[in-house]
Amino acid sequence: MSIFICIFAAENNKPIYTDMRRILFFVCAALALNMCDNTQEQLKQRAAELCQYIPDHELKKCSRYYMTEDFYNVLDTMFNLPAHEAMDHEWLYYFVTGNGGTVPEYEVIGVELTDENHAVATIRVRQTWEDGYQSEDNGEDRYEEHSLYMERVNEEWLISDFDGHKADCINYIANNKKEQAVRAAIFDYLVSEIGPKYEQGDLCFPTLMIVAEEEVDSIQTMTVWGDFWVEWYNRGEEESLQFVSGGNHAGRLTLIKDGNQYAVKSFEQTVDGAKNEASAKRIFGKHYEVYQGMHSNQDVRDAVRQEQMDEYFSK
Image 1 (tube, rainbow, N blue to C red):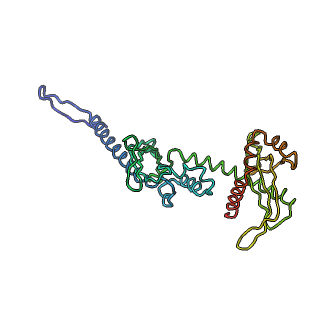
Image 2 (image 1 turned 120 degrees about the vertical axis):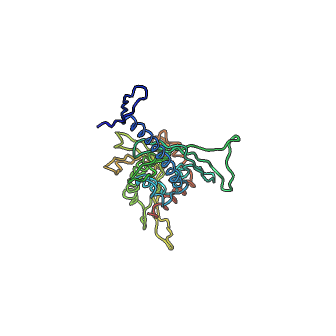
Image 3 (image 1 turned 90 degrees about the horizontal axis):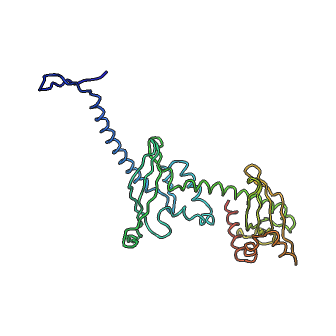
């Protein structure tokens, strides 16, 4: 039912009826604008709080309470990578400051509410050296802008992403799982098929030096070129290993995907003796120079072996 106000005009003594709905509309509009301003301010304040939990060189354990569960989980997986893998992804550790020994100072300069449960905050990060000196570039304060993604979960705003790193992490984890499956298949094949050809000890340990990989047949088949060393060891005192026997087995492997796992279908090896170089050039083809660089470098081989052993015994 419409509500009317009766106002009497002075000049003709006639009532003028004004629809109260028009007045209510302007009142509601003003309230909505005020609520919007309040929401924006609250989101900015919350974004400023969340900035303190942006991963930078470390993922704080308490961050799980300020992040969505899926974002924290992918970051936790990445931050617990073996050291040699982590160093291939330095972006993960230097979200905002880089590897320069600076401390970030955050400023939220705006928040866009994309829907009732999602928002994107634009934050400005200024780098300050640990001694308090502020970086400058051409006489101007040096800062960068980043995007902090927020999601409302159980009425609380949490970090759901930062500069798209979530997708980077998910892609890496998927690729890493595939890489580990490929390496596990090669490792098991070398132990079971090549290992018995040598004098055996307590432990057969292959060293995998991957030269190149290629996927074919809609990723159901994979070709892997590598320089592989299969060696047997006896366990000595104080967890030391004593070499028993072993040798080099370089060549091209063909692997078949079976579910989430891989199995070695065939292995074409380089031959020993005078025909070794010719067979290596034929088998490795365009990858020959990379193979030769690995194969001829004892220091690289020792470093890779130690790295893979450390990872193997840490599991």
